[in-house]
Length: 208
Image (cartoon, rainbow, N blue to C red; front, side, top):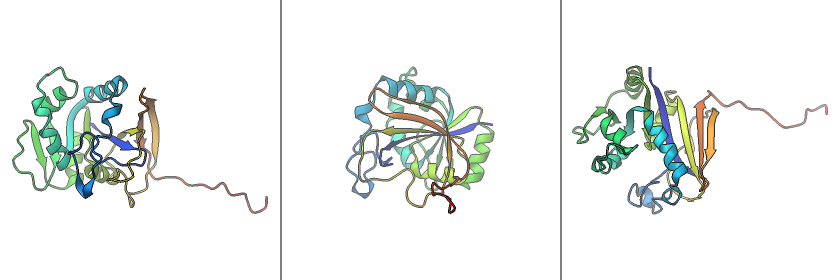
């Protein structure tokens, strides 16, 4: 059975909207797209290359799928660590409206998300990877289907934009499994879901 791995880019204030370019996602008037670009050094590239090297298939939300499908098929170098995998491996897109995907190797998942993704994990030998796809990722976390989170936090505060975990997200705890900091200050951290948060208190006991 495969493992479902989410890789997400966020700012220090939790924004994940339009990391890769100005026109990637301008919803709600967001005009700060492309905020990860200045931090793309060798450390960052090495980490991302490592993530994609472990991919067996990709699961994407509709918006991220459209962004990827407009770009990556044009990158035809099979040795490119990202393009080579995205173009060659199976891609699944969760969408109730997409009917005729043009990117080769794409299957549309239009039914019950929990059932379809559970079945997809069962028949995937290796990592089923989610990149971007914030709304899909939140649904997968809420359904308990995520096995690992790579959270890449960039040293920038945006002050506006859609957040990966907005107000109202289900409480969840994570266990840290790996981490490093790039030369440009990007925090690359890996977490495994660990159930619900636990709570305590630093208050002094009443009889102290």
